[in-house]
Length: 189
Image (cartoon, rainbow, N blue to C red; front, side):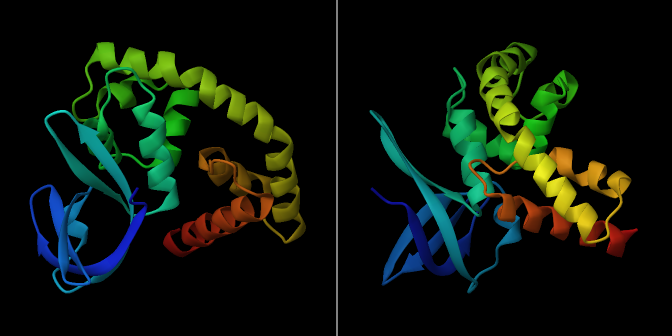
């Protein structure tokens, strides 16, 4: 099974890239082909989808995007192309935040998502997300305490921490992501 590819982009299409690796060109569907350019060296996680009528590769640019993609495939009626289309408009952490905050309008506004499909997403993912959020409560308290100890205010932390979700993430990974977002907020603010 293919899990990742490192190579050079040789063509950028409307929905896909062709990445050359050791003389072979692999066509890979991606969420945002416009973010790539010809001759760019890339590393991409792969999902190999096989069906009776064919097969294709899906490229995911980060572990977070891969986690979101896998999560969406658990929804009845969502296949790889729809999952990729959703992730072209919303990040994994934004998706989790929208579901945990019951933001039905945001989910329904995503490409290819009808109100019926939005309901299915909530139905299939709400329990999964609730389980993970409950198991992370102590970990998030630990992260918040660590960030307060290095000088961040509760108000600043509370703006970024609820939107961070790293599947099976360690406390250190969550702290790193929170620090990155806090720094970006200071730079842009």
